[in-house]
Length: 188
Image (cartoon, rainbow, N blue to C red; front, side):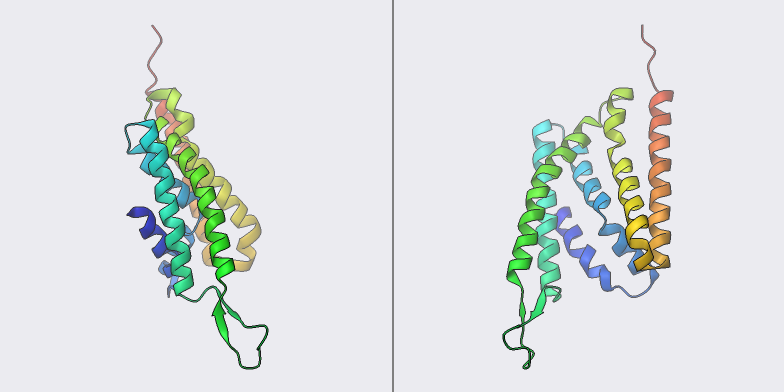
């Protein structure tokens, strides 16, 4: 399933060696990429119900796979505060399960909405334009926030990646809007 694959690959690439691995990790771990997944799933469905359901299901699978992968990699390991001298480490299951449940709840809501947006984006012309602009808008906002808050901490590769993604999002929005205007049917 594509959702689970995204959930596995995104954290696996976080320790990727080299610029390509770092760029791929930044892109696949971004909220807009996950939004694009649910949107694309909704776009591929012919019914509203299936679009909402599958958008939700794919994001839930991605969230569960993401936190399972991070747990397996040791990202939720913590020192035993009752015995710090011996250095006993254990998994912080409360942290893992808490984050998984919160993001699964978000996946239910956002996956359904984004799946529906994908379905309605299939509408021709200006009526579907607002829905087709959802992912570029999310990408522009997401990367702008990352550039403002995270870029100073992450360095040049992150800054360059997020700048390029933001520029591509704006270009995609302009292209989608231009296409909708140029292919608009005159009213009779």
